[in-house]
Image (tube, rainbow, N blue to C red; front, top):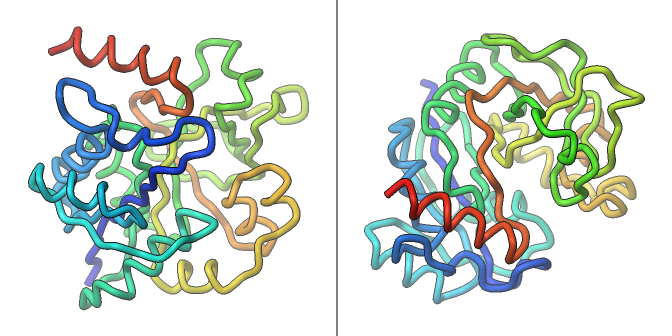
Length: 245
């Protein structure tokens, strides 16, 4: 059985923009927009994992499900605690969807889940084409280098992830999108590992997997959602989403 659940880690004390999960766009908190996108994918139950009671309240008020966790250093550690607490039966894959990308395309979530099942992959994620060179030099935007050029249906292996411009070193560079699918056994292994120096220095937990020879596969997303890291990001995305409405 290839059952999948989606867990969205969220917390109020984000380093660059505190309180961002509850910032509103179209009178709905950002975290609730992400929940709705996850629900639209239809691949499984959706839960928000958080250490903050106000996030639980906001999610439940808007028709979502949330679970209170302890304080964690990383989002993956948080989703693992939530997964254990939920005691959901017969789950093979856990999908970690970042709570600051309210424009994620449900079709991309579905595609990632399908490729995980088809390839029996350990960890999978999404990336999009870089169409603006300024992205390469923006340290708030994570880049991923892959072994093969990403095309439809290709589930290439990640070489590395970086906040820096690594386009001169690696030819296949893409804009990484904040979503991870884990086989349950791989998630258990990942959280049992100590944070690597590479992970700590670069503030990228996915490097913990690569540093321990755990493969991460990457597929191309149809769209490139705007993540919210700063107040400027929030205001720009708010303008786009409210204009679309």
